[in-house]
Image (cartoon, rainbow, N blue to C red; front, side, top):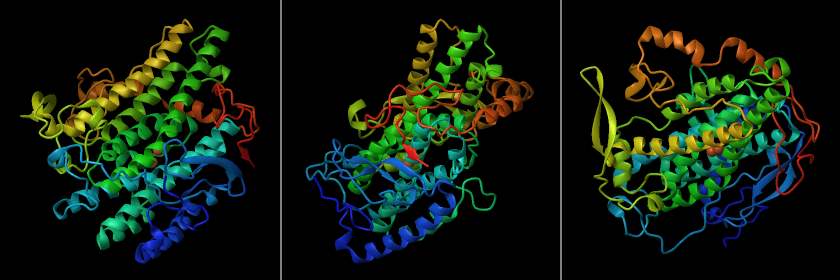
Length: 471
Ligand SMILES: [Fe+2]
Ligand SMILES: [Fe+2]
């Protein structure tokens, strides 16, 4: 297992000490990053001691330990999963060949664009929730929020390192933009639409962690088997961190639904708003609001950019080795809607041309299993309501469906009916106001806000009532 000197100003296992130029550039980045963190990181909790998971190694069995830390002192650093000298490329024209230490010249631009787009989402997701600590429903939830903030920040470090170490001047020049664009800014927004959507309350943060961090997981999975070995190792380490983000979303929403169901039973009503809960129908509307934005993140159905990256062995499909037998030509077809003469028609397209759509399909299936778990819980509690994943054609901004109108169930509707339908499909102003009114902070260990059930267990084997954040 590679040694990491935790006392280094930039702890790392990427050999920073032996690379003077890289080391200088990363030291400059560290200073600029901390300026950005002070402006865009969590506001109002500088003095808090937070029980944080921080990287200590790169071994999957022991890559992190927990300790109290102030947020600014999180162990930012550069970590890559262990080197496997024998590793061979998995897919594309390089399949079976030794992996690459650098990106071949002809793919550098495509790869740079991919990395900058990925890197940009990391600080964006911190900016979206700068103020959420003010409404955390418990001390435990406050800690999880901060854990995610810190790790998204560190994810920026991880990709910045790749840009600087492997893309020369062009890569280094991109770093400034990563620290100067701002989520939601009119003049200098983040690159991807969803990352400019404000997240104004804790409930939306839970949907975001379920939906957008899960998109993050699938993007990382697609890169974790890259023939560009530094990218594969970097993203494999990021995946260790990412799993917790999805847990925060999935389990957080389960707790909200459980609380609502309990209130429904206690008061014998579907309308739990007067009792300080969030109605199941309201939760479905929040799902309908957030899901299309994250479904968009997979990009256009047909993409020559993704096809080229696949062919070059640089970005694959999620679970490429595990779920697929054929990794080179991808002649197997996939039904994909395309626009012909102003109408949608279904065509069978070789999978290599529709990698984004193949990845999106796996993503949607996994969200389906999350929703299924919620529904099973409701069924066991004797409640008839069932959640659904909105159809991928509903309310899209990217891809072939963006110029057509569909209901969340996937039925085609006219433009007027669509506009009318939105009032019922998305959260109303009254529902949003109600949700916001519930967002009062609860910081006392062991206490919990009334709209969410307590977690079933604590962090790192500690009790639920542990003081995870000392304010
Ligand atoms: Fe991330
Ligand atoms: Fe994440």
